[in-house]
Length: 285
Image (cartoon, rainbow, N blue to C red; front, top):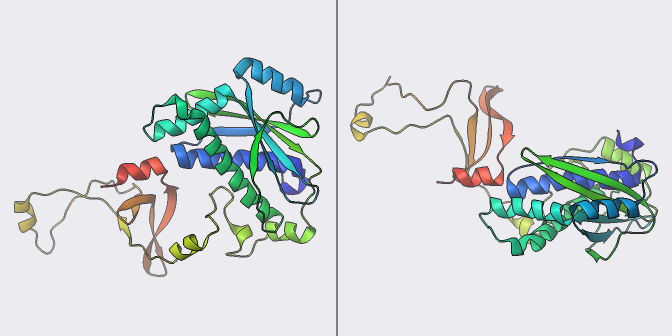
């Protein structure tokens, strides 16, 4: 469904679903398959919450308001089985096996995803937005709601609920145009699937730091006696097939893989794969 045909309430739910997957991938090294859909026409939030809670444990609700026309606010509800599963994936990726940190870890996941949603919302409505959230005892009594379902290769994620209250309005026409055809380098042109950098002076200073970038076609270990035999015309066989992707290395860490191309007489690398945090850690010397 195109953004023009999506209601603001549905946009909030679908955008949060997208950024949740991105945050989980960055924290745990694996992105689950997530899908957001509207409930059945006769379903109510109260009945859906009760049903999910009875099957998967009491729901933990979080509320976040947005300073936009119509004063929209979203509630995210996760049953115990869902937030413990997500927390366990993140803690496991960090080598931590402590169930007592599950709730705190889930709230960190949730707050990071909502921070990304805030940035996406600012780009869509073409304004700077600052907002914060808090735990809520219950969801709103009125408003649209959506069901978010997900799955890892070996485990299904119990359904989450996203409720949108208030009267959210579409952005002004000029903001829509900016999103439809963003100018190069503008905030609207930022990839919606990638986490946005923090808006701080310190981070802006770091953005100017130069890092060494190299491309590895492969490597091999040779005895010293063989190294001493090398002459002009000697051939060294590397541990990489001709059709394998090369590695892009930044500061001794593999950050991406791609194929070698030629651009205006110079060699270049077309990126095919961005490494996850876990994969980057495994490549460190």
